Length: 236
Image 1: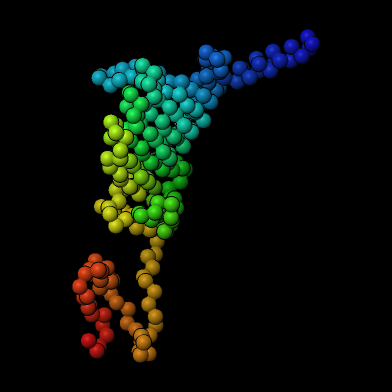
Image 2 (image 1 turned 60 degrees about the vertical axis):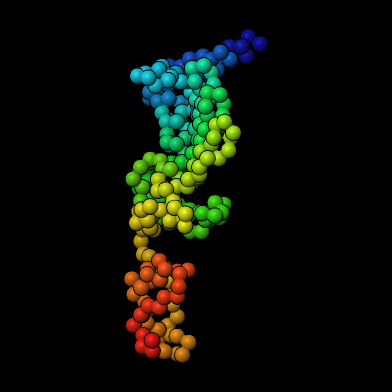
């Protein structure tokens, strides 16, 4: 029995010795651990005092190698939950929710964090009318650590009804037809393949591909009164 007690004490001492600093929580948990490389690890509680008119807060979550990871929950200094955020690679990722001091849902945000070791990423393009459906995948160049990506919802804090919904694609606000205010920055990187066209027309004559400017014009005017455009063929 004495040997077992000694062994337990040794294991406890050894486990604590791997931390440069830490605190013991009210439930006996080892919190706010800093390893021997000065990196934050494991569960942490963070206190921020009010400053220059900004309210203070307390938050709790996990660090992995000195960066936030997983879910973090923020509380007002009165103890009210005011935010739930998710992190990956130290940046916002996935759903974030924000609340009033009375617990009413204020807004929901959607973020996409990127691996800081990569400069390119492949991103799913979702159907505007059905966000569960993937309609394309594009390769994009990365210039930041996290992007607004997905649906953002704003709520009436009195009734709980949705006031406004926005949808983002890598920080670009999508408009009604699924495009964006600045589509040039959303185009896939690499070769843009033109629509398939047969080598010959219905009469067996060699088909002449329409110039891109004509294709763009037809796309812009689709759904309007029939507009004919020249494509280089005779017989009009």
